[in-house]
Image 1 (cartoon, rainbow, N blue to C red):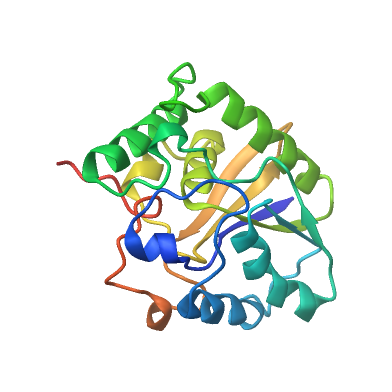
Image 2 (image 1 turned 45 degrees about the vertical axis):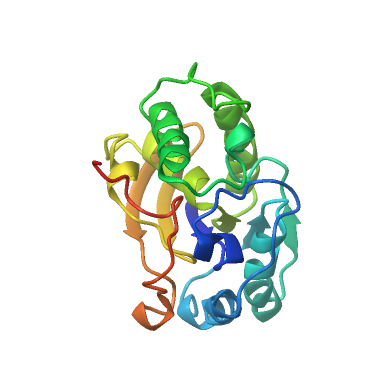
Length: 220
């Protein structure tokens, strides 16, 4: 089957560079609403059988225009939400962002025992995300799954057989960027494309926003 992992549209926390992972989370900015609105046309030639979204408000708002356009229900899944920041929640300082991203990329490299400060370890994240991807994979030939920057990047790079785990840390995933894979939970996944810019292209990029969960990990 074919899996389209789509990051949600821009939120106020993305603009401010904050780690914002708690439920139900914020809505979308005006730019985020425009990003969501162009998704149906950007995917016009893609056959989509099912649409899934996380329990956070922003993914469901992003998925709504596509669901309306295709006449499909949004299936809200418990395990697709963003990786919890624990005691780093709402922080935007460099040290906190670095700790968060290094923790999740350690999981992608297979170090699942590493724990987020005051939060989960990699075993917990992959267990919940894998479970809902399995449901999506059984739902049709192509599933559009609306999720979050860190969660998509780490899961896709860890589960795709044709890229190294470090791939996630080196590649951006802007709001409404899409990661496309083919395969299944049983046979494994192959990364087909990593479109880091928003659906709809560069006019929907906010170059001034500090977006820690979507940007490549810097070396400093």
